[in-house]
Length: 603
Image (cartoon, rainbow, N blue to C red; front, top):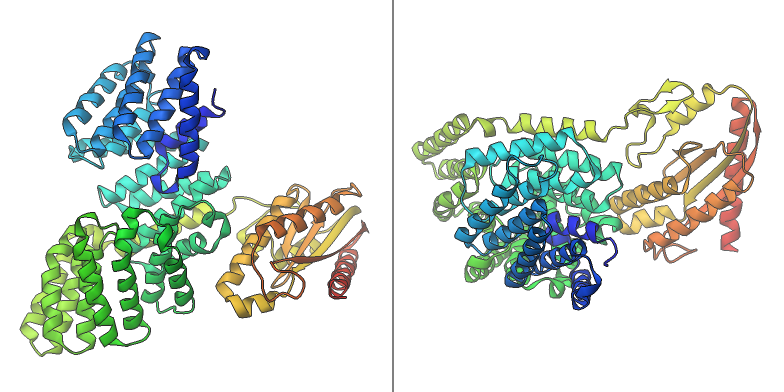
């Protein structure tokens, strides 16, 4: 039997395709087929799961007929052993395959079979995955929006009442459907934040990665808030833990969106390096993405020339090339909004070149496209047209489009509420992330004791700890800092430097016992551990783990004089403390030991 088969099934049913490892899928497929060759070895319940997993693999690999064949076998076995839930599960999976193939007749037929087996007989918890697959398939076909909204809300309410580790992906599915189908970014954000909370609570890096992607695209596409999108895109693009999880398609897409956000906010420091990363990975992209990348590359070049370099003639030439390539691949183009984005960019370039009438023609031709993507896009065009007509002195037309803008804005209450929505999202996001309670000698801790960047204790916490000290305690104290961190900041940039600080702090926390150890950001790149563990060998083991784990982060540092990667130096001491002054003296001793260690490494 395949090890962890239930986990594989659970993951493949709900994980987005862009996070799947194709090589791992093929290896799993080989294992399934090897099991099927030895069919007599397995009980019917085991064989049912093997066929179901194989069907999910084929579905993920876009092999629809093979997937249906496996699911049909599952249904037959399930009927034989009188397991109606597995039978319905197989039928719902078949329906989803047909839905993706745009075969609506068979999609409906098999979902009717599934629901006829389970309705009135089983609880929602027992049949949850079948209902979720119904939500998944409605991305591909027409449906009754009111009934579907009620089903979505019912799923959301159920998940909210029954928070579990495995519900992270389900909240992501609901959130993505609220945006894609109902344009409801407020409800979507609530779902994404629930998923993020589950990811953080259970340390599910993959869930956190996907949530960051969806939150960033909600801000960028839904609310047109580039600055806020950057906060969620930067960890995806810069943090090693996420880069190792995302497939190359998602990494490239996240990087390109981050470039656009940087251009929107005129933050040009890292654009060239990010653009180089995109270019270097083009050959590794899937065919579907690769066919659209040439147009996207010219589009980004045009935006860089337009926004940063102020070279409008070059920007226009590159924008024309991007549009031509887009039109050649329009039916299979991979990136949303591109038809609107490229046309609007061309209009903006004409405006800067003071060729206002050409810009007006482009903007007007783009209005119908904007209506496809939503009112915020349409509003943006009306404002641009009003400004363009004003620039040529046609004040009647300018007023006409300002009125269109006001009328649309007034009629669309949800867009009138954009700033409020943004504030609600920010409030919810912060509330989800704030540490609930911290105990400091009987006091309830507040966020004033937490360093904003690294999320560990700060100097305010240390000062409070020393002031509140009482009694006699055995303590171990370790002082450490990142080697040649200033050189890292100077050469890699402060954004990357901040990411290093976050990674190092997270690694130190992982290596310590948080019930006994207080981890403090002592200075810029200095960290302090105060441990109350009385085992004389404990500090030595913590030092060994920290050195090893930070080395294994494998963060390149070509400008360090002691290592080819980010490294850390440490000094420590231990003893009995009776007062605040004892603490201070021991911290100073640990600091001296740290600098002895640094000098010794240079000898």
